[in-house]
Length: 404
Image: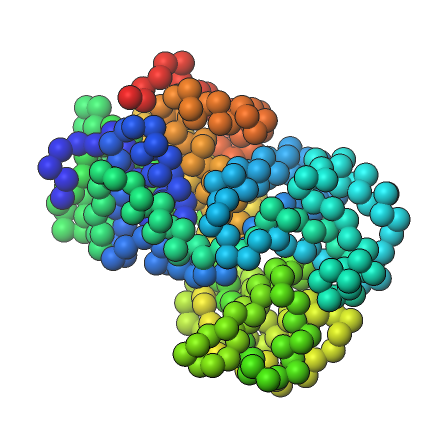
């Protein structure tokens, strides 16, 4: 229990909560993070094989531009934190068109040569050992998401934390929010509250008649064991691959004296079981075969060593939800990050502080990446009011700075 109120209470210590709390701390405001787990990054963010790269849409839609701006933020924020740098996004089999035409298409999407470049199948064979055309993103990569959560929380000197405590309900009294645990005890008071606790955000908003339309999507990653002398090891590129599914490079495990190869993931809508499934492993075997085409491997050689299961939170329109809760002063939400947790949490870490405290640092960060109120309106929770889809949900930034 906190002895005195803080400026900001962040509920949730996954990648969203950890990133938002870290940014608030950089603004100089007092912050407390509360989570039901015993430390940061222990639920859906608890794995070590997250992969991030720009999306390759057909057109440069506002959502596409928004995601690309968020990706540029990720490149900057995660510099030095990547486990394996670079991602090769595979084209469909048989796609190997004129390089200039494809590169122009990427430029139209805002993916300039400093972000990504088209690689023909011939060049891909020479560079990566795989006969597939695609787009190489040198600044993208894979990362230990659980480790990043811990680093972003533990590196903030003076940031307060409350672990193994679940907030059951919130009350606004005067200008302070009060957070109560399951025993009815008020464990924290704050001027501003940020809900970064996935499905828990909906639970806390129900009493305020607010609906976020969230649903679960189960995802299982499979970690296959590959013996050091196995021929299979020569078939697997030593880079991050993305296509129908994704994989990270094989990593040597001294304990088992073998390599671990992470492949995934399933996308099981409206399922919330965190138990590993043999059917999901079989699905990931097929993803592995598809990623390695045109090479063929014996699926029987892909022995499962371990699995990771997480339940992703998505909205009914598949866009993340981040912004102010209508009619509730100083209450904000960052949820429904889906399978792009690192991407959207990085954007949320810039947007939420800009909305609540309007510091020069936060506002300039948004502007630097070309983010305006019209684009950010796509993500506002107000888009669900009366069935609206964001046309009237433009975020309003405070005029005065509250940051110290």
